[in-house]
Image (cartoon, rainbow, N blue to C red; front, top):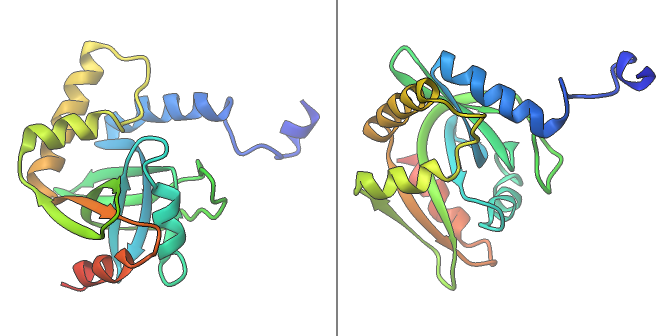
Length: 183
């Protein structure tokens, strides 16, 4: 109790509970809390999405040398005036560096560890929906929440480019990501 009153905790309840509370509140503000790594590259928000062990922290380590890492494990995407923005959070994974900055969302990349480095577009909206829903942090859900979240996800899928990003541990994928963000 004394530690909390001195401001020693960065949590409302406990960190997992904060995520559940935040994901419930964000939907009322056209937002999603996503299991992802967020990086700002050339003033463009890039979201690297995947479940545990997908490589979010690995991609973050590659990119944070020259770009602004928002968070390597949980980020927020919100629609404001018809456009989506990416925001960092405090809820990090392996890398304790976090930043609350934001940037216009430029693209969402689904991560796959591989023996090659490549980025390819995903055009099948059903595949995007299936993959994205597994990475959205969910509260105790009810039909109202699902209706709201699916409306936001539909807008995200319609307005944002999605990609498969395959990468190895060499770090060579960084050049391809930077080229993508320069275009």
